[in-house]
Length: 109
Image (tube, rainbow, N blue to C red; front, side, top):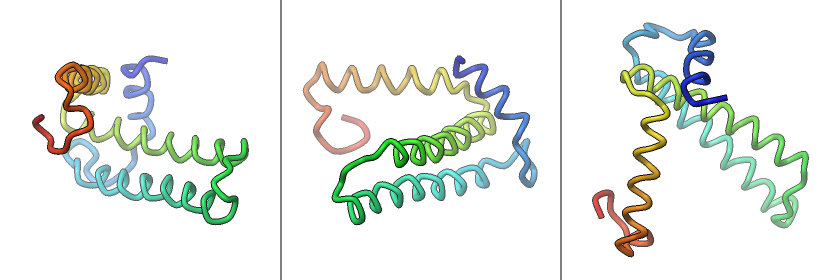
């Protein structure tokens, strides 16, 4: 599945207030789902000594899917193609690596 396909199909399941002009709702959802990913990883560290089981990987994959869904909705709300967002990110990271700034701090390095 491509990002374009995912973005289109995922939109069919988008049900939230004012879904055609509301980027705030999916941004809030994204932060909640990212927190759920972090919570599951925290519990692996706390309860399992950091050893990642296959069951835990599946649980985290499900939460990552929710993160992806919200990312797709934010992109759609802003009129962006998820594929373009991904490409821009890779280009930015490659540039940072080439310039030796990938481990530095700041957005515009």
